[in-house]
Image (cartoon, rainbow, N blue to C red; front, side, top):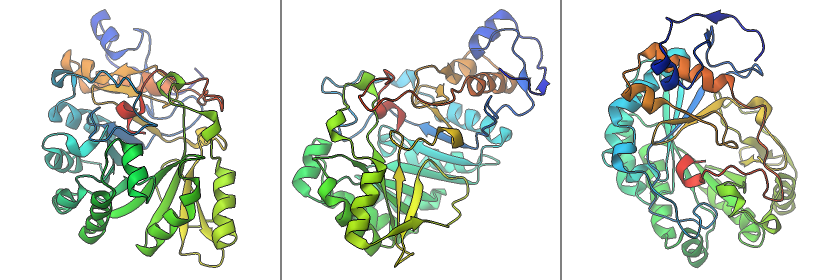
Length: 360
């Protein structure tokens, strides 16, 4: 690690050093959320469950995944405390994911609790939209600001096949209910050659008719690469070419999105109000600008989606650790953040962890 200004915390005994995941000689940087490559973490993604009411074919292995027991999941109190420490370090934006976050019991209450954490300015979710029609109003009342909704196809039969039984009409009803309730809605689609590549323009039209932004995500190899097929790659360049062929030239968007995620945004040159985003982890890397870390439902803090190494913040809390201990564990994780992922377009370089447990 390079030289940074450091603040020495109280000396840890060996038990607490082990809990934090950091060696006993590690001291916390003055900015625990600035990594070795001068990237500042200001965006926390929190998976609240590793369960989902869909089983998308690009997300869940054929033999399924071993779900965590309830006792292994962070409680609402534990999540509130961990988020509070992150907020104290400068995190302002929180995205709640799954699995499917809305299937966690009392999810609306969790949103309200986390939105009230001092320093947290925005709470948003990523969802499959299946339960959104009923929950949109209560979630807005709880303080939710926005929802990214997955919709990979507009063909009901293809949607059911991709999601292992999902109901497209119900998801569309959820999207429209979220808009009506006042949520900022974006739409996500994993772009797959030979699956939905013929629908990219239609998906954009669907979004634009509702005043929304359509975002396309390159398929990434997780689950040890078992779900990745190189022949299904649809690159960012190919996506732009397809959209330009349908609607005319594209140009980079000039909209300031504040503390944004990994998407790069484009707009139609002839109709600049019509925008789309592309998350291009495979062909146009964005690791150098990464500003986020991910917390799994069982408290594992992952500094990078593309690697398996993690520090368990739940164990720090349950082991009696102080907020200083949590800050130390967070700093150790952030200081270990890699320069980039090792995804290969062959499917090699994949971590063993599953997308369903990370929420993207």
